[in-house]
Length: 285
Ligand code: GUN
Image 1 (spheres, rainbow, N blue to C red):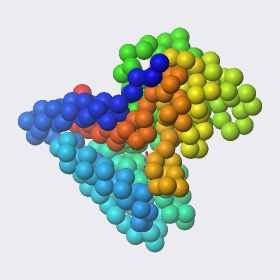
Image 2 (cartoon, protein in one colour):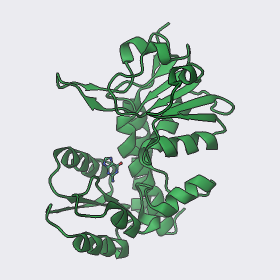
Image 3 (tube, helix red, strand yellow):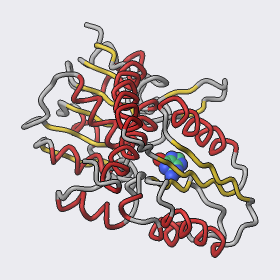
Image 4 (spheres, helix red, strand yellow):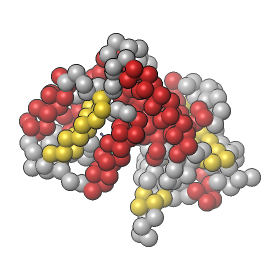
């Protein structure tokens, strides 16, 4: 049996279509969601990500501002910019692209973003609300992972989900969101001793470890849902996930490809968060 492919690109396009329609409805009321992106320095990967966010804003009819400031900027300058954006009425979402230059305290900057404009979902108050199950802006990649699983039509309730990786931006929030869907969640990480035993019991397997093709067919329960958050550049220049796709797809029931799986969902969820934040701030929800 070959797995069904979970097509993140087409799911993403579907969601973006719905977002664009809603933006048009809001435009008739004279309202436009606005996103500000702050890029400090010239990291090449960050420049690509920021351009993609700018393009998504343009395509979906959002107002956008991109603040590209030099690598040499001080922490005070970045904080002053965040403060200005916090006060700006036409900006409903603020994203500071990470990583920041090493002399700038990332936590101090993320904590300075107004909670209701924190469309990355990285502010400790949004993280805390996620932990206790209160309403919050959800981190984009984890929210995208859950949406991809939902689109398989498989009910997560009562399923055994195994998450590999315990990062603050993927593994931990994914595990919380899976629990919110009533899955039973096991966390694995680099120090887990019996990882294969655990993953072989997973009805849902989410992999976010950052090691190319580490999870092959031998880790996978037949018929399960496999979500690959990995994005690794191979020596030959090609992209590969953390899952060995060619062998895994012969065992899994559903699987995300890389590229074209989780990747496209991250910006889509960012746009969804910005729309939500704008409606809340504008008193429109
Ligand atoms: N750098 C890489 N991924 C992300 C992300 O999701 N948000 C931000 N702010 N920076 C990133």
